[in-house]
Length: 238
Image 1 (tube, helix red, strand yellow):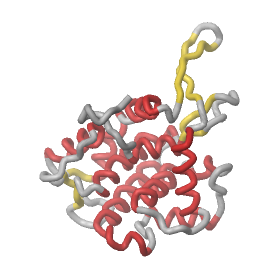
Image 2: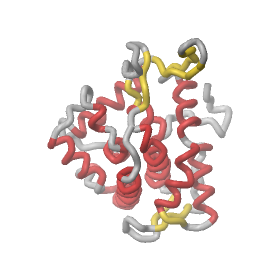
Image 3: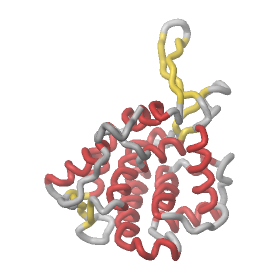
């Protein structure tokens, strides 16, 4: 379990963890007690987007210009404490890079460590089961617990009820939308035109009046999310 005594282990969940937990679909793995992660086909881009968005929200990175093709660089005086975030920050600290380059570089290695954190926290359970008496596979169990329920309630309030989000929940909802997973969350977040329109607003950085003080982070996050949308559009959906 993560503790405050180890500086490389996070006390608070990262945005990437929150995203994967929200994408976890309980009872969808072919048996009532198993689940799967939605949008597996685009997951590595979405997780990378969550890492980059969190770095932006924490002012650990900045964009050189406010365009989709912007290059992003590390803020030298503000490295993140979390090891997962720091690896991405160090990559950008070498030199500024295009957002698409960063997403493609950091995304493929994120699934395993992010899932491991969720298992260590007890948000998701994992066990090995034998299939056809020959193959051993990992299966995901549980319902995501209270933390998934709370994240889901916050995102649903923004997308369905029109509540003004915090910057973190705005980024989370935008990333879920960018991943293409919202239709798969229909039983929990009713899928329809109002939800689609609100999600697209969040993707563009329209977070409401409460986010006015976060203009730089909002713009940077919108750049990241729109790059996830572009990348995800050419990948198969799962």
